[in-house]
Image 1 (cartoon, chains in turn purple, brown):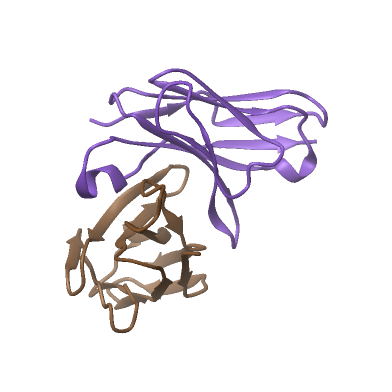
Image 2: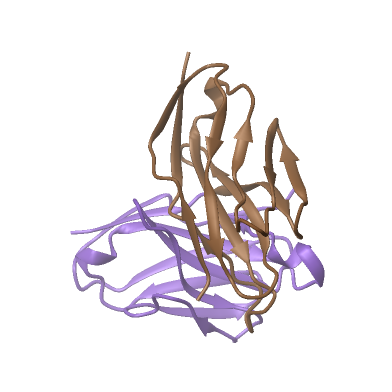
Length: 116
Length: 115
């Protein structure tokens, strides 16, 4: 079975702290994604990575960075957390095959981050 | 750019009622269309998909037909159950995009089914 694991389900941090959100997939997928989910806004893409050490900005990259040192792990970093980054964060992955398979994203359970 | 518009929720139905959640899209090229479902406390999971015009995706009693003429992909189920209570997301992946692996999601529709 496909598995995407996010390291924390709930996280509470202080304004200005550096925050790491970790995501690991066990499917040997090339592509990994970070989204944030907010009520009424759906999912918005923050960053994605199509290979180790490669990354591309999504729709809302400001205030975030990412790291992909190993194929199975994709980290989201909040350099200096702010209250407007309080949200649900979802990680996803897809294989890099041709056709419809590469568009089917597999999601982790999410990390609910509160920044106080 | 690409966009997906879903009917606003929340939607509350009684068990065995008929469900429709509307979804329309704007995209260049020939997108693939998806419905994802998020059960309470979980991540999103694929419910069904369609890759070309007139395709019908189906799963767990849910259906959606890719209508290119109306740019729509409405989700339907003939008889909902309490266990269908979840948030439903419509999404598209456009093959004309340089980053074709990306999905564009709608805002989500919360469905609550009462016994």
